[in-house]
Length: 156
Image (cartoon, rainbow, N blue to C red):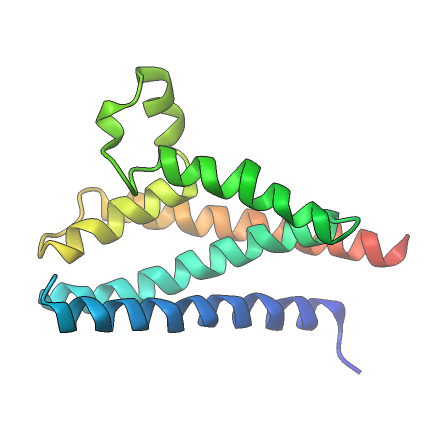
């Protein structure tokens, strides 16, 4: 018999490595199309593995709270989609109103963008240690919350 902690850990790691497989395919396409040839892209892999772990932990929180399959649409429509628009993935955060710039500075995806985007351009990220620590903290807190909520769900 295995513990619930082990099952949840395996689920989190599977989702994180699935994200890493996707990232590898995207990096391969970028290299093939000549979008970036920076050797610094190799550093994106461990960073994006951490990002995958963090987002899989956050997804496990939603999984523990879900009453049904339809609940997962909230994860995408209320959490992921707004975060993509606010984190600088599609357009610079400098164009946002000041209040939203402040809020977006602490979104998990913003931390990932601030770390990975410069690597694609052959530069080192500014404040890399800060962004890594924030990502790790998000992952640890999300893991703890997901584990507690999942245990509570299986008890009651």
